[in-house]
Length: 331
Image (spheres, rainbow, N blue to C red):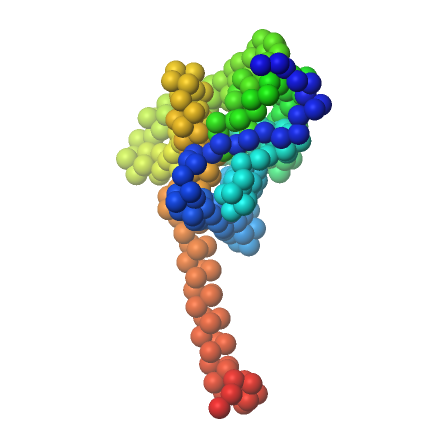
């Protein structure tokens, strides 16, 4: 196949999971449900953090940022997939593919860094509780979100520019439901050695280093927990880390599965399934993990449900006593 200049490419084809027409409505309903659960679940975390003054702490500030990033992360791929299923199309424009790739890398990197920062927050809270408010001050919290945002933006920009220099063959079918970096690079007919080196180096630097930071933080946390004399104190300290550890395990296991499955089996379906896990399933489960394991979040949820119930009863009582409401409601 002859390579074509990348300026002439107008579109790619996202093959998705299945080409069987009878499965398309089922897939549309499934992915739409998962997307709505992800968006509303993470919005609840953000609203709960903003509305309750008791949750104006560094831990919940970082958690609300993670929820916002998860909403954006999922929104980079699922809406396009839903439109393609609805329109019975597999097309994504060249510019749209590069843009989607940029934002996928941006929000995946932010997820990675935020999980590391949250591990550091738990380390300070458990190992240095008396200095927690001094160390985790608002200025540091802002920097811990701003600096990773800049690093992720620069990394995704670099990777996108590296793809723009490639020439592609006439076969532009991506065996995926999104423009995943490795899949797009492997479609190129020009030499991809430099792209591969940048991808591997970035993976070691931007994924390995944060993971090492998480391991270091939790090694200190575990040693500190062993130093606590009471069993109740150990349980309380460990329970504050369970939610975060669950999210870290989900994110890293599924994201590593993308590269291990594609490298080991070259099976497009297994790679797409692994990508689905860390781009959709993990952001969808995060609110449930933090809500079910977090007493403060459950209390806010209870208050919101109680307020909704009281408000509904108030309006119902008001409508039965107000003659104007009776006039507008008919005989």
